[in-house]
Length: 170
Image (cartoon, rainbow, N blue to C red; front, side, top):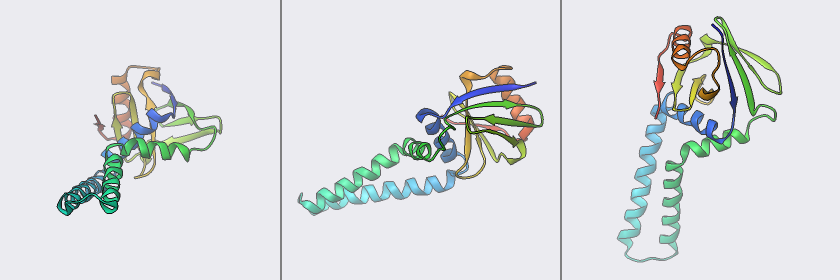
């Protein structure tokens, strides 16, 4: 059986990829960063409250706390945005073909063959399948463009080829 996807690496796809990385291969590190970020934010708010006055220092402290809070809330969007900025021109759209032995990704730049053994984790969001290769490298596939079978058939196919379970990410 041969499956195909056509994926546009837009902001939505890159955000899903960043979320997949954060919730799988970066899970432990991300949890520590979030705990630290929330502690610093709470400490900053406590310091401003305890000082009893609102001056320049309090304003800077509140601004720093706000920036940390926004970064924690919009982490995946920010990571997706910066990853998208690093993409090579011509790699914004990819057509991917899966076969039993490997799969190929074709962009304006060229055609690359990938092997299932190199995948270290699989993830799935509402709109995308995500293949993770390291803590900073992944690929995303738009479910709406799947051809060659159903979503369930593809899940079974890819889990058999990689010998891994797909992690469901909300």
